[in-house]
Length: 431
Image 1 (cartoon, rainbow, N blue to C red):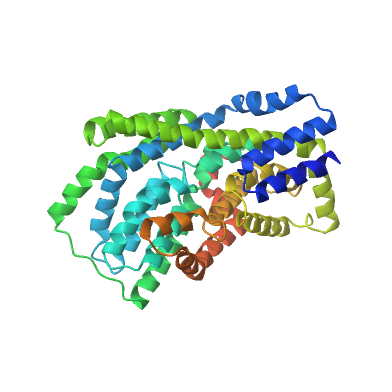
Image 2 (spheres, helix red, strand yellow):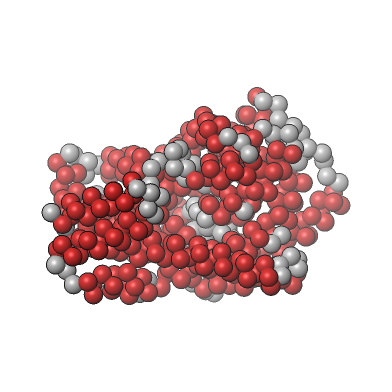
């Protein structure tokens, strides 16, 4: 009965337009009262449990690093160099869009940060260069999907907290899938650029190209510093997040001199708002997880999946999981899906012997795709606002061309675990 009331309260509040984290907390509060659980446990779940997860310290640091890079000239200078290098190719600005997202992925770990930050620069440059709005938005949305797949990755940090999988090995496993997705997207850019006769940019003299590279070089060093430090054993992923914040801060203040203290204060306030939302969502998810475990929902689902034969094959379970996450992602916030649904799925995954690092890449890619799909696709609305393109045209272009590319990448990552785990195994992973 208490579980039913929890679900009713949750869905009613969600339907009324309340933030999903509020619906999770209030539903949990009502459940605790109805089931007779001490409210002190409620406080413990929302405060103490979050504090106990040291790995979460990396999340605010990666958010701050992304905000600093977006509000200073770092991303602009990187995109300017890539744009000049690829300009002479037909569709060069679209290629530059994808390549810049791959580079930026090594610093931010967030798809939304990619779209809202460097995506703003990319879309405007493409439209000024003769590309239509829907295509410019679709390329930007699709390339931003790479952000949380190539390390570092905020969704992977959260998944590591939920599953106990190694953050370092999850980061390593993201390299090849991220590059695969980028390659598939550039293949589509090649086809569409010739079919639609997109423009060819001017060739940049070598001296000008070299000058642009030298200017952007300090920014290009950031992902090398971050990932080299982690895999060289110099610091942990959490420490690496702090190091990259310090690096981009020094770069913006003293090298490029594109960031004053007034703007820095604004960045810090925006970061606090971002962190507050994510932290509250994570705290609310601990409450929901407690409710689900107390009501033995994972046990019920395991028995249901066994009766349906879905646990007879790991490939069948992966297929049903992908369908479930994809459908949920069309209607719900991906952070909420990750925090609530993945803990329920983990016992099923372990029951059939699916590697946790592999499953982490599957779920991360699936949930990032959800940000591109209507009706809840946040990237479509952001790029529509940036470009002035009607959101229906953005979604139409994305669904017509980019979703098949992303789905193909997801299928490869889902059903070829050796491809995902190849890099981690080279560096000692035993999974």
